[in-house]
Structures are given as C-alpha cells and as structure tokens.
Amino acid sequence: MINNKKNFLTQKGLEELKEELEELKKVKRPDVVVRLSAAREMGDLSENAEYTAAREELAFIDNRLDELEMLLKQAVVIDGKHNTQVIELGSEVTLTVNGKQEVFTLVGEWEADPMEKKISHESPLGKALMGKTVGDEIEVDAPAGKIIYKIVSIK
Picture 1 (cartoon, rainbow, N blue to C red):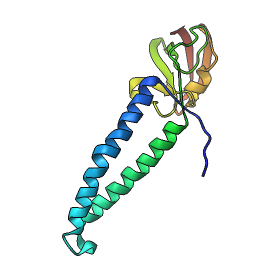
Picture 2: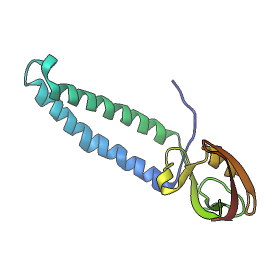
Picture 3: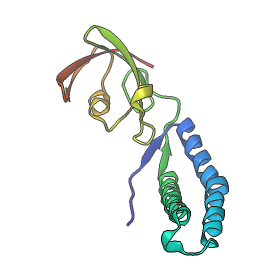
Picture 4: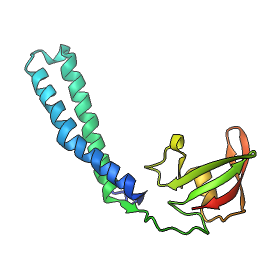
C-alpha cells in the first residue's frame, strides 16, 4: 500500500526518530536474533517460551523498523522560522482557559505528547488553533463539554 501522507516533524523529532531507527537496526534487532538462535538450539520449539518471546519481539522490531523507514521517507521538517503573527506548525502558543494560562507547541502527529504540552495540528485543539492570531477565541468540543480558549501570544 502506497501512502503519500506527509509526516510533519521538527528537526529534533526527525533526529530522535533516526536515532531510534539506528538503535533498532544496530543494537536491539541483532540482540534478539542472537536470543532467537540460542532459544532455537534448546530443542522442542512448541514448549519453548524463550523462543516464542524472542520471535514475537523480532516481529515487533521488524514492524517498527518498517514504520520508521516509511515515516522518515515521508518526513517534512518544520523549519524553526515560523510566523509569530499566525499560528502554524512549530508555533508555541500561550492560551488562557478558565482563567489559567497554558503553553502549547503545535507539532506533527508523530511528535505529539500531551504530557509535554506538544499537541498535534490534527487534534481538535490543534485544528482550531491553526491560522488564528493573538486575541482570537476558539471553542473546542471536549468530552467534558465545550472549552473556550483565548490566544494570548504566539512564538
């Protein structure tokens, strides 16, 4: 299946994915292949838990390698120079919600990490923010109901 979807990444996100790819190729996969080979030599594979575990781990690693290679082929790096007047990918946005200020960074879906306040441009909040300017108010549907955000600043 050919997927022409662009994967937006910051330079840091691109480097992290490349590091993960190298770690999987050069360290983790070879280690699992050695474990698999050693487990195979133990005999009866039908009752060999180590063989089954190693085979499953190898399949997981191979799938992740395929995923990372496809992702990197379709990567589009968000340059660090972005507009500070309009929200776009890479923007750091300060919002007020319920009288409290929150700072979010808009990133591609592969870098999204709500715990680090990195939100995907494809999330409900990310979609609502794209193209907006300081002073705009946006309304986002959330499980708890509608939430109104006011844009305070864009970096």
